[in-house]
Image (cartoon, rainbow, N blue to C red; front, side):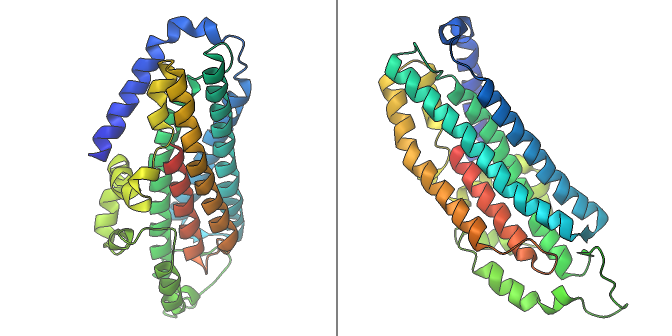
Length: 281
C-alpha cells in the first residue's frame, strides 16, 4: 500500500510541475542556484556512501580509511539534505506570505521527489550495512591489514555476543524492525533485490506514519498556490523535521566510530540516516 502511495505521489508531483511550467516567469526573481548546488552535493555524497558499502561487499575488506570516510559522509550528507530542506522551507514560506510574488513554492515538489528517491536508497544502504555486519561476524569481511591464522576465530567472531547486545539495544529502530533484522540472509537478499519494496515495508517500521514524509503533504497546496494551506503545512512540518534532525545528531554523536571490529556502529548510523530522510521526504 505504501509503495502504491509513493508511485501516485510521484506522479502527482510530476503533473503539478508540468502544469505550472507555463507560469515559471512568476518566480523568475527567485535565485535557485543555492538549492541546485546543495541538492547536487547531497546526491554526490549519497553516491559515494553507496560506493563505499558496495566496495566493502565486493572486496571483502573494511579498511580504517573507509570507516572514517563513511562516518564523515553520513554526517555531511545529512547536513546537505537539511540545508536543501531549509531552502525549500524558506522559499515556500516566502511565496505563501507574498502570494507568489517572491520565493518559489514549486521547490516543495522538486525536493519531495529527491527525498523520496533518497529514502529508498538510504534504506537499501542500511540493508547493505546489515549484510556487511553479518559477513564480518562470519569472518567473510576483515580489516585490510589484519592476518588471521587459518582456522582461528576472528576478533569479531569473539565479539559476536557483545555485538548482538549492542544491536538489540538500538533505540533508533521501532520494535517491529527487529523481526525483519532477525530474518535469514535469503529473506534479506529478497529485500535488497527489490529496493522500493524494502523502503515501503521497512520505512514504515522505522518511524510512525504521522512523522513520515513531511514535505510530501505540502506539495499539492504549495504548487497549487493555495497560499494559506501551503504556509500552514510547511510550518507544521518544521518542528517534526527539527526533531528528526536532533535525533540524527544525537544518534551520530552517541554512536562510536564505524570500525571493522565494531560493525554495529556502522549499521546504527545507516539506520539513523534512513530515518531522517524518511521524515524529510
